[in-house]
Length: 171
Image 1 (cartoon, rainbow, N blue to C red):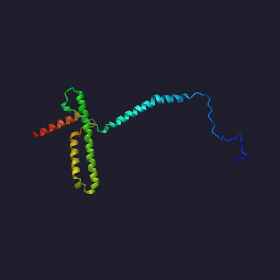
Image 2: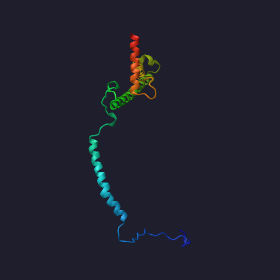
Image 3: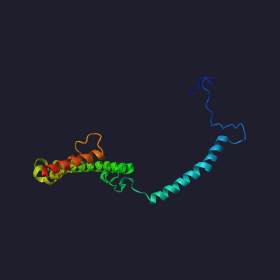
Image 4: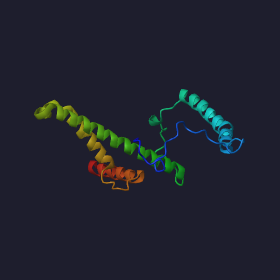
């Protein structure tokens, strides 16, 4: 600082940080409460959770490979057995999703082969193309024309109509 500065406007800063002037000799109650909460609630709960997590990590089940048991089809359910009908409907929905994924996988294989082979894909990818055509034909025959509100009952009725048409043609 220059020698001719105004000492009232710019006082010199203190040379050392001042010591906090305690008003009381009692400890801070907020600190006491946080320590009591930590040792009484937080620490035991956290320790218990860590122990449970370590035990569960040894017996961890893979959640995305859940296996459902096969349930009876709608044709095997008794009349008025709503639980059986519901289980059959849920089984049909799972089968429907699985069949959709099968079609997607086969289509991806066919597209990858077409991309890899280029112009000569018709001769080099004949097996993939034939597999894709078979899968889509089967998927369309089972789930085609069911509409947005497809259900196991509608699919069963479609299958029944298809069987009746085949019998009429053979007779």
